[in-house]
Length: 274
Ligand code: SF4
Ligand code: SF4
Image (cartoon, rainbow, N blue to C red; front, side):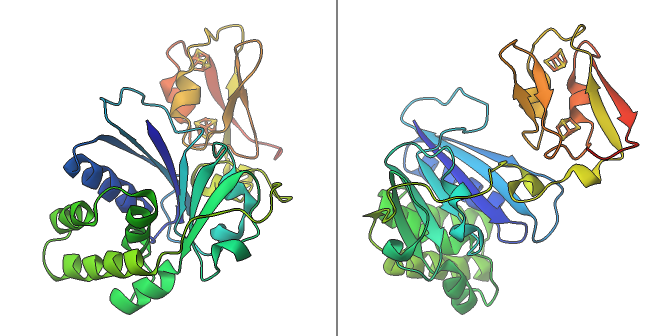
């Protein structure tokens, strides 16, 4: 099983990248799964998606917490140590940056490949939509899906001229991707923690809340539905097998309130910001 996490911003096509990757892998004969994860959909907002690829049927449905590969579509996010959070030892970071991999300051027992996907997208698509412009690099440094399979997936999603422009982007990206090198810094750099959802990647979203979810732990059966459905990964799990809300990540969407099967979560008006 190969777990992949994709970081980007709204407007860069991260969700489409996850779909194209999963579809291309399917054309290669693999089993695949794409999991988009939205915060509020807004251009420029950080977003995260996940992909699983395997030779056997993929039965897991949760987020990929310890990816083998992290793909970063945004050049600013590509400078963040947090992009490597959770990456398995020896895991691979594929970054959209004009830097060579040995110049990247992200550290740890990780491998790095880079491609200037923004320049490629501007040249081929005339817009900074970097999703396809990084998939060619993925194919080259990972070894799959085949470039032809990505092309087929693109033409299915974007028949006609748009598809052809995106195919030009993946081909250029395939040619221009760097080699894979071990990270120059052996230790992780100082960095803020990563919350892999929507706006939560780099920002405190607590000021978005008008209502706050309040959990009655006496009623809670520990079923984990709230943890599973929370779009901001704002619910962590305690040693007592109970949910606990990380307030800086909670945007007050109320999904946990709806999903709790025993009505153990109540929505209360926020009077004081936490
Ligand atoms: S309201 Fe619930 S589901 Fe929504 S972000 Fe907060 S904890 Fe997560
Ligand atoms: S969904 Fe409700 S019962 Fe299940 S863990 Fe969350 S609070 Fe507890």
